[in-house]
Image 1: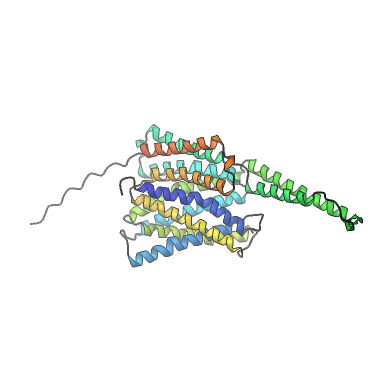
Image 2: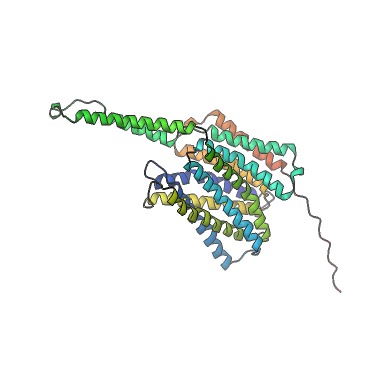
Length: 385
């Protein structure tokens, strides 16, 4: 397939992980009570989807056809750790939102910091810190700055604000003056009370819209920053750790993927059930539409992880595979979210400029990435006579 065949799988991961947020967001909304999202129920659905795709499916393939490579304790531990820190990163975002964080500043911080963490962690593991050129570090910085710009200049009008405006419009239409009928000409003693209730409802809608806007503009509190940092560290270390597990399983693709699925089951299914007891959420499991959307979120997330494994298998290295993923995924996420919410007309020139910056930075990272030293060929063994 050529030396750049891994880019096809990088593209698969960028697409899947870019769609992960909007799809999961829809599941969170539908699992909620119509006003508030149910984040932990959606995370549980993601863990179930990972278990089916990343555990059940690999086991069936391994038992029927087998695969190159072999099981090893060290490979299992490295791969399971990769899945664990990946799931902890997802949980970190959930908890950042749980403590009042807004995607307006949470996601730019995560996608801006994670590639830098990934590169530094990879270079530390491979001991190639001294091989990186100045242009390589410039490329990493450009990707991070561009990703921050893309998400900072995305449409700021949230779904909650749109719903508040629509609700206010419906309420005002319902309260619009009209000609009274003959029966209504008789004074109703409760009419004044009803009118006051209507005004209170209108005031409440306006207050909710103002609160939503104020919350979106409010800066992060220490707990938000703690969980954002947790996600950046976890997602930054995910690629190098998974690559190490794959190498210790002699290049196997499905065995490390299976370990990732097991870790997601522990972190994204068992842990959220425990958290639901400490952080009660609105909504219900009976909202099947939300369950389906959240499961689809887990499906695209799992296929994205599989795309990374295949990218490694076809010659991709974590030091440039992961920056490309973290540079491209937020672009797909922003575009898909804007289209889904009908906010395309709000995209500014600054957004498209940031998009171009991310692409140029990713290309620079790919071209100037430090190369691993070539291993000398092993001497030929003498032929026995």
